[in-house]
Image 1 (spheres, each protein chain N blue to C red):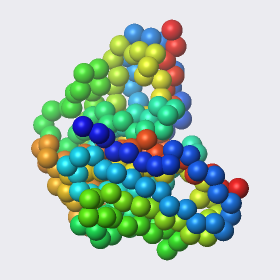
Image 2: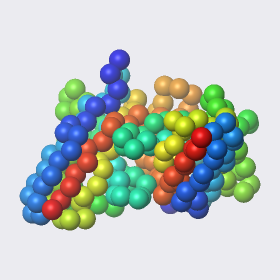
Image 3: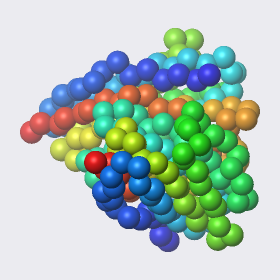
Length: 119
Length: 116
């Protein structure tokens, strides 16, 4: 049973460029969340997708956008890259927005992340 | 809004000893969930343990236990019999409620170093 997968592993871009990151959720999961983790910080929530729609959004500008496909995989797009966008981008999947298959909690399984460097 | 505070930037422990990593939280919701994750240098967040706000007993998962003190709003992680492989960043997180259900709020983390 494959866990959460992300691609690419590493990416180097220059300021002003656009980037697309990809995530495949754990088998049986239909909800995907994206987090940004700057160096030395905890992850910050970007947004969450469920049933191909953005359900929740954190405090991130419109330059950050996403998409979820019918097979539940997801993409994170960042336009007009800034130096401050350099970070580890983590994808997390879970079984249903707000519900859990174990007890009453909603465990989120994380992928290995994509490390984005903006020069 | 939910807030997680981890005041220990770094902790050191000798192999086979126990260590406690501190976490305090702030929320006005009566129902919430608390998580601990381990992040090795590879970057992947590994789920360790969960505590629900209405759970009567402290959560345990193998060598990990959670010292949950609801009145003090603390959820400290205790690692018993530390191993060299436990060296990593540890994050405390809280699950949001209502419209933010499913979203996790993270602290800044504690870097644990286990020495032989």
